[in-house]
Structures are given as C-alpha cells and as structure tokens.
Image 1 (tube, rainbow, N blue to C red):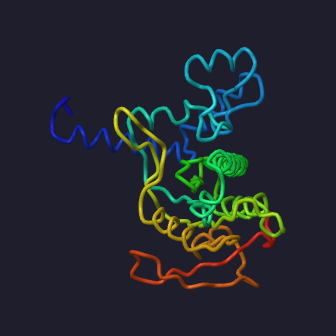
Image 2 (cartoon, one colour):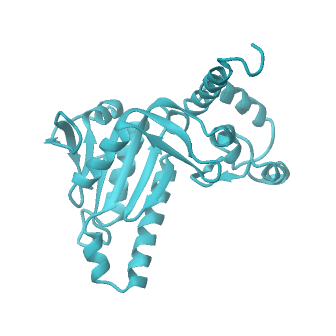
Length: 272
C-alpha cells in the first residue's frame, strides 16, 4: 500500500496494537529478547526481558534507556518504550487493584498537615512496595488511593491470585487484624478485559488501564469497609480461590444495571 493511501493509519494502528499485546501478554517478541539478554552478565535483571541492571553492561544499557521503569523498578523502561512512543496499548485480561483510606477527610481534620502528609507517604510507600513485590504495575497515587494493575507479562497467568495476596498483605501491613491500625483501608480487586497501555497527550503520557473493569474496581474499593478486601467472583475464579467460609455480598454499584457478587476477605484470610 502506498504511503498516504486510505487504510494506512488503520494498518499502522493494528500493528502497534499487536506489538502492545505481545508486550503485555509476554508474546514471542519478548521471549526472543529474553534469550538475547541472558547472554550478558549480571544480576539483578529486568524480570521481563532479562537485560542486566548492574555491571558494565547494565551501566551501558542505562545510557540507552534500559534503566529501571518507575511504575515497577523490577522491569526496564525499554520493555515499555514502544507503548509510550506510540501512545498505544491493547485489550487484555488483567486484574485491577484499588486501595484507599477510609475516613481520610476526618483524619486530615484531626492532624497537623505535616503529620497527615507523613501518614499518607507511609501508606503510599507501603502499598507500592507490596504491589511491586507481587509483580504489579503501580498505576498512580490519587489523593488517599493507590491503584495497581496486574498484567500477564509481569504477574503471569495467576495475576488475580497475586492481586488478592497483595491486598491481604497490605491489610496486615497497615495494622488490620491488630490493635494498631495506622491506615484504615478498603480494597477492591477485579479481573476482566480492559484496555491497558500508554495513554495521554504528546506532552504527558502515563501507563494506565481503562474500561468497565476499572470502574467496577474503583466502586468496590469505595464500598469496602475498613479492613475489607472485596473481590469479584471473576477475580476469585481466576485466582482459584475457594469461597468456603467466606462471606458473599451483593452490591448495587453506581452505574451498574445488575448487582455485583463479591467475596469479602480480610487480614485473617489465609493466603499465599
């Protein structure tokens, strides 16, 4: 097809989406890169393409943009470079994770501004550390909320299980199940097909997820009481989670025509 002919833009977009899907789902292209980069020493390495972060090779690779990727420093920037440059992504099955502090407005009213900032930063750092350890992408911090995305390329086929495990660990890390709760949080976890990739403008691009599963997860986090993790039945099934002994709850979520069935988990729920 000649440049400029009708259909060029569509064909280009389809190719970009195919590359994005391969990246996000750990396709053949990524597997080929792994074989190549494994020939270079040394550890630690990007967990996706296996290029080294340290040693002479690692120092050199950082100069060409293969240093740690801010949304999850276990992976390199280069693995997601094309998504950012083209501002593209793909519809894939993934697991979304929202956690926010209950009663943050009241908390802010009862603390000095500096003390409140310190408390929020502790929450952000704790949540980000746990999400990264469970192979999530830390999407963003919004007010009193932390958002994570678990995709197959990073978290594997059990991305839903990793998200639920991360949620239970975060509940425990914030003091739930003890008498020392320093951040009363509610968590929503949902699995579904969402658009995942680089979105934004030419001036500002961020890695994010869009679509109904994202909206549902946000609503779940808002509906969860302090100390609760609400997981949709789709997330529970994908995680291989038994509902034996767990509470089922039907929620009328804003904007949804049918009630959403969720399982209620807490800091005492066995996991791992």
